[in-house]
Every structure is written in structure tokens, then in C-alpha cells.
Image 1 (cartoon, rainbow, N blue to C red):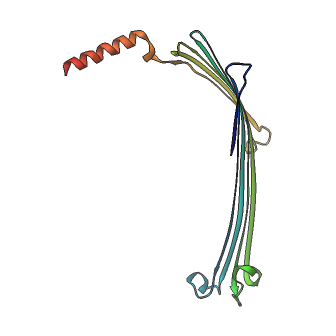
Image 2 (tube, rainbow, N blue to C red; image 1 turned 90 degrees about the horizontal axis):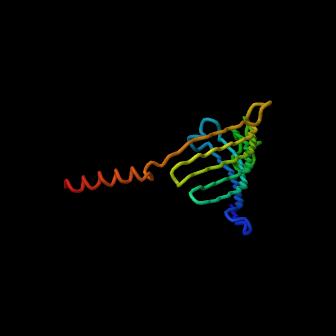
Length: 192
């Protein structure tokens, strides 16, 4: 996991942030049930090998700009993100061991052998632009456009757009509501 943040000195309010994460997990399950165990009694022993591994990585590039002029504030964010996930696993099951000495180390000695394997990979790309305008920290207008690409989307359309726009009002910051709330508070306090 890594993170770096740069504040651009010649442009006040401009920052760049890089986030990186990479995880790798591996598992190697090996089990042998000899004929003397409940799992191996009816089948002259059973050997199971199930190795698997998975890797996930993500990179986020984030540019942020914050500017305040008087009662007006602009907060803008740009994002580029790339993510990759992939995994693979195998499964071997062998039964019917005439000689169980090697156990799961030689599954070919089993008389009934089944094997399976699978692998998958997913990739995604994301682009996002968000602008949040506020006036006196009371009235807000945030707008966002996001474009996501994903390998699991339909074959002919790997990208989708997600726009949003909203309005916000922090009523508790209004002077007339502050006076009203203070008056209610004082009346409640006086009644006790």
C-alpha cells in the first residue's frame, strides 16, 4: 500500500494525491484421509489438493482544487482510477488408494481421479469530475460526472456514464432560524 500527496506550491489550493494498493493471496490446501478415517473408509482413502491464488491492485490519481473568495467557495476534484482483479484455482480429488504411503503427494496412485480448474480476470477504469460550489457555507450546488469502464459490462458497451446534480441548504446556518432556535431553547430552559 502506498500513498503520496503533493501540494502544488505555485497554485494555492491545488493538490495531487496518488494511492496504490496491491494484495496477493495464495492458498495451498492439501488433505489426505487414509482408509482408517471416516472420510476415507468407504473409498480406500481420499486425497484432495486445492491450490489457489488471487491478486488485486488499484491505482487512484486524484487532483483537488479548493478556492475561497469572500463568501464563495469552489471545491473541484478530478479522479482517474484503474483496478485489476484476477484469480485462479485448481482442484484434484483422488480416491481408491491401494498404497496410501504417499498420500496427497502422488494423487496419480488413486483409482478414481477428478480434476477441475478455473481462472478469471476483471478490469475497470474510472474517470470522475466533481465541482461543489457553496455560498456562505449555506447554499450548495454539487455536480458530478463519472465514466466507468468495466470488463464485465456488455460486449459492445464497456463504458457507462453516471451524472448527478443536487442542491443543498444548511438551514441551521440561517440567522432567522438561529434566533428562533435560541428563543425555543430559552423558553424550554425557563420552564424547568
